[in-house]
Length: 119
Image (cartoon, rainbow, N blue to C red; front, top):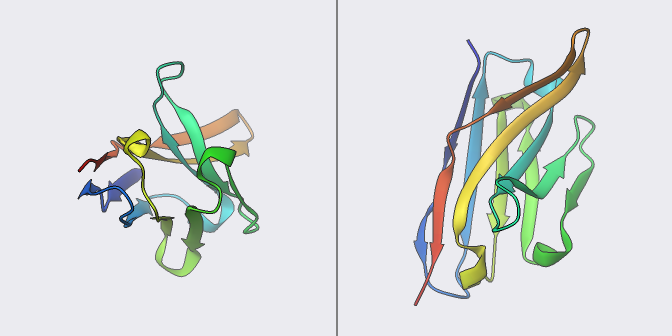
């Protein structure tokens, strides 16, 4: 059974930091690309950052220089270090594990963890 569980969310003041963790089980974690998403008014799930199974990391321009994505294959964990948080970063952040398989795309989602940035 595949489980994707996010943690680390919470409330923080503008300028503060949080580190989100995504723990995966039931999959060969090292073979999966991993990503963080958050909703926007335009999209129910908008990409924030991703790291490939080879460790190539990308973040979207709106968080570049503030957010860092990383993975720990030994412990099946994905991280999102968020610094200099802004009110517009307030969202429920979801973790996604995906890869191409014989039958098509394999994609698993967690339930999300809420981040609230407010003074």
